[in-house]
Length: 157
Ligand SMILES: [Zn+2]
Image (cartoon, protein in one colour):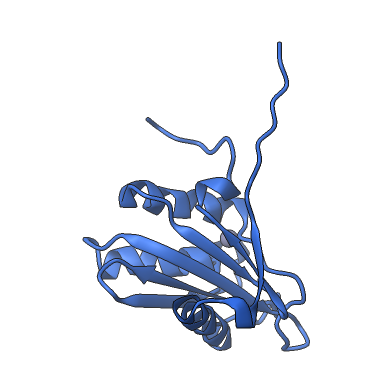
């Protein structure tokens, strides 16, 4: 028997420390929060994915009165991205959220487990790490890959 640690390298950056490309994707995720349909939770989430064909796709959470029928912003976005551009591969994803006060959440938002698993599928398809940017009001967490957000992920291979 042995014990081992799983370490996840996280870069914490201020918004003004991001590269122009990172900042652009973060801004698209923030902008997508304004298109959220969240009449129940009032928690407005936006996501933006940059693809290797140069396109960027964004989406937001879409809730439903039959609660489980709605989808998170991350899955709205990754499913749309892959259905719109099935040949393209994901490069980077940014996720942002506004709380009930309408302001960006103070701490960087983190995807739920179902979204991590869904995003991992597209990282696997890409064949390379997909950078993940979790956006907060004053800082962004940058993770090197989707897999780093989901240790012991389910995989059918
Ligand atoms: Zn989710």
